Length: 129
Image 1 (cartoon, rainbow, N blue to C red):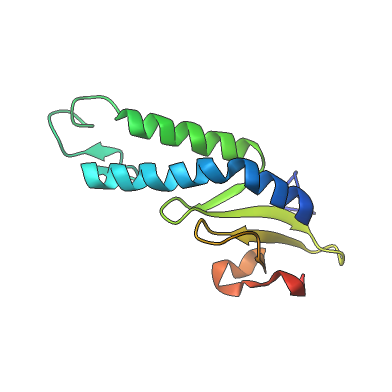
Image 2 (cartoon, helix red, strand yellow; image 1 turned 135 degrees about the horizontal axis):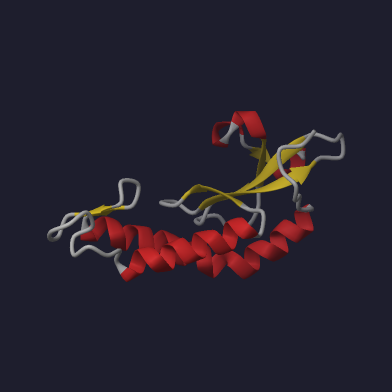
């Protein structure tokens, strides 16, 4: 039994990455902007006024960030790090093992994969896939 319903071939992941790369880069930028504003998206607090979120509403940057995240997740992609643009594409190896094709925003393309339980620390070069 697999963890994920949707799986990407390496080629599908590469093609999808090229279409979502601008969204991932924007996601990282938005998170940095929210941090600089004092907005803690994990606690949903904004230290700029009265009420639970400063003026009682979420900053438009957060709304945009949430839209980007939802769009990516709806495609079957796992977001592992908003700060660094770390994402995983579920993939089935030739031996039937479910793994992640792993990419981070500062990398040129999908060059790594890892077994699901191993996480980022278990990354291996794509040539070992």
